[in-house]
Image 1 (cartoon, rainbow, N blue to C red):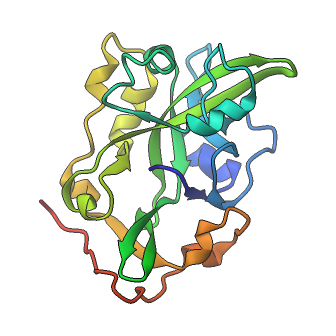
Image 2: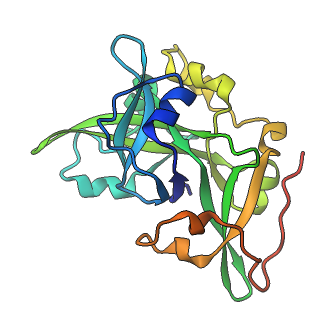
Length: 235
């Protein structure tokens, strides 16, 4: 976790939602099955302090990485260690970003296999996953890369998975993006009342194959035999 998510909004929509100018160069595409190493939209602050919608390769590459393939193992950074990790500490201190998403996928075991779920705001609003980014100087030129922060699941989400992406409500977007002396103060999970606004939607097994893409991946289906229903609640 978080290893698969969806973003189907256009660059224009994301620019408006995050009050950022579009610096993506037309590289944003609707993707219902975003997988590691994909090029994804991110919101960050440029050198002049303006919000920019840009793109980055999912899987952060530290300066010493020998090839882009190393990024596939670095799609997530743990909130508990991000400030001290050799690979993540510098981006966390200086290069934090937002990763827009419609929602993310999780799998829970059942008596007959696994049940896939799509976790998404019930009101259809955009999610902002906490991210950090870095520029890797490779043989073909600079490459911007990104990792999504994860944290221990809280509230009813513990019934789905022990980890969850660090989700940032809209009132935390600006503090996450702006320079601060101690960014560890930004790592608290969102309040349980906000988490109760998420929908836990059972979806089909097709999302497990990265080659599959399309709106049907996020459509609600009946629970698999043996799957236990989970309902968003306040704790």
